[in-house]
Amino acid sequence: MTSDIRFYLTLFWRRLPLFLLVFLPIAVASIFIALSLPPIYSAQMRLVVESAQIPGTLAQSTVDVPAREQLQLFETRLMTRDNLLDVANRVKPIANQDKMSSDEIVRAMRAATKIVSSTGRDQATLMTVSFESQYPERTVQVLDSYLTFILNEDAQYRSQRAGQTQEFFQQEVDRLSGAMSEQSARIVAFKNQNSDALPDSLDYHRQLLLSLQDRINQLDRDRADLEEQKRRLSQAFELTGRVGSTGGTQLSPEQQRLQTLKAELAELESVYASNSPRVVSLRNRINQLETNLAAQSGQTVTGESDPAKAVFDLQMADLDTKLKQAQDQSTALTEQMTKVQDQIDRTPGNAVTLESLQRDFDNMQAQYNRAADGLSRASTGERIETLSRGQRMSVVERPSVPTEPIKPNRKRMVMLGVFAGLAAGIGLIIALDMFSGTIKRSKDLVTGLGIVPMVTIPLMRSREEVQRTRFRQVGLSLMIGVVLPVFLWLIHTYYMPFDELASKIAARIGLNL
Image 1 (cartoon, rainbow, N blue to C red):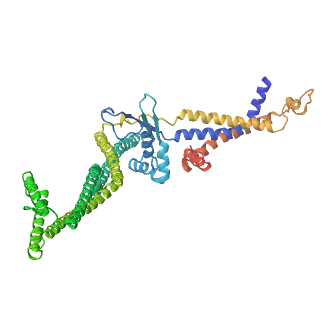
Image 2: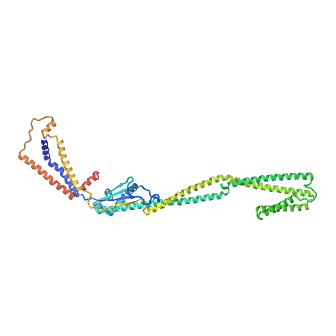
């Protein structure tokens, strides 16, 4: 065990310059980097999504966005290129910003900004925003700009959403109101065009049709009676040569009819007004009958010598007149029946059309009622958002100027550099010893050749050789230990700091430091 330790110490001493050549650059570079890195300060702020101040059971806001989604939306808009460039140009939080391109500034701003959101069931929704910079005051200025942007976005987003909702329902109400007016006009126009065949008048038209049919049947019976009277009168006159008894004064049928009509007129005038249609119609018939009697009387005096023949002709003329009137009335009633039947036939089709128009109107009315209700709620929701009484973002912790940097940890970096240098140097010595293939001690003979030597004779050197070797080792080690750190210091000071050099090398090989 003691011999192994002595062997490795001797080996280390022999390879000391090589160890220093590896250890010193790593250790010195880590020291230079730790000392040259600027201090980084960090400030943070905390935001919370507050619930609506007005209970939803009383008045519901029209902006119903989950808190988590709202935070993600704000984070996305906050980290946009235009917004980051605007904040960076106003605050100048990045070192050597004037020498950087726009893309580099955006990458640096995104790397320096950290946003953490936390939410959970029955937990408040929080957002923590932090920013790192070499300038402590500017970290607060950046966060203030972020805070202003988030609060403005929150207010603008919610008021805009509420306003768009209200505008949509207002447009729907106006559109449906106009559509209802047009539909009402269509219904009125259809009713005016088909006023004689509407569903409401169907029962009336059916009763009127039955009444007209009864009147036509009655006229047909009256006509048959008149035809029978003509036939009997003609037969009686042909057989007897007269139409009635010869004794005493006998009124002609026309005169009897005239007296009957006058009696009926007197009865009607006692009940109806003088301009009543029935009274006027009866008076016209009386006037026509009197005219016919006067004409017949003149013919009898001037041309006829047979009174019986004259009476027969008068009676036949009266019957023909009655028949003609019955025929005319029957024709008029038939035409009226045809018109009423046509109205009845058109009524079902009009009913279907009118029902369709009314159904469309009812649907529009239902949509209008829903839109009006939505407009009322949207107006209330817009008022809630305008007064900031709905769900909103509020500040829990405002950013403050940091007094101590959060990085770099210089002691830790120096220790890691020294440890890395030691590990690299010792690892190189061990690797060279393992892969050299030379025999340095008797143990190597046993391991490498499989033979056990009887005795080993060490290499004997003179005192001058030992001193010369030692002097060379010490000199080379001192040269490496002095010249190499000075050389590295000159590179770090006059050419490029090691932190920048490391960043460029990392960027060249694709690493992100």
